Length: 192
Image (cartoon, rainbow, N blue to C red; front, side, top):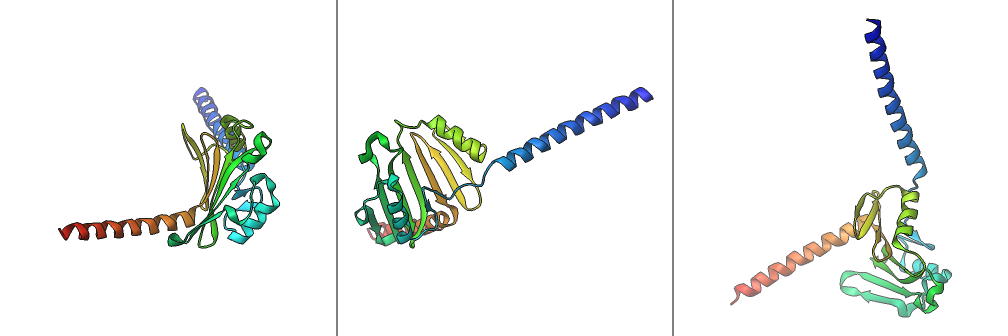
């Protein structure tokens, strides 16, 4: 009987030991992984166009040249600022970057990185150390996500920040517009 109790006691101890180790590793991972950033270089999601222009002027790494880098898409309430740091040559870690706005709110940032200065694996390792393992991973893209932000690292080498709520709103609008265009096409074809 005492041998059975001893065996059960050891088994209980081992199970609890593994549970405690699992819990500690989970907590340490949670404590050391940071919340996702909502932008880069002083430019953050949710900024207005004028706030973004000011931030781009302050950070010369982007290569922002002023209003000539801004383009409008009036039919969709969208504006895009495109910057180009390639004129710095291999001195810059950045190449082209895009800042997309919807109703004067920055909802998507695409940072293209100079592959002569940094490689995909180095950046992937850095982001994984900072934010933990990606939520999804495939041969061309690693994605980290929370309720409000999606950040992805894409090959050859770009980092994207997306405001989930505005992106969802734009997708709904695009689907409604597409459905309307399909209905119009059907009506047109029925006329023959």
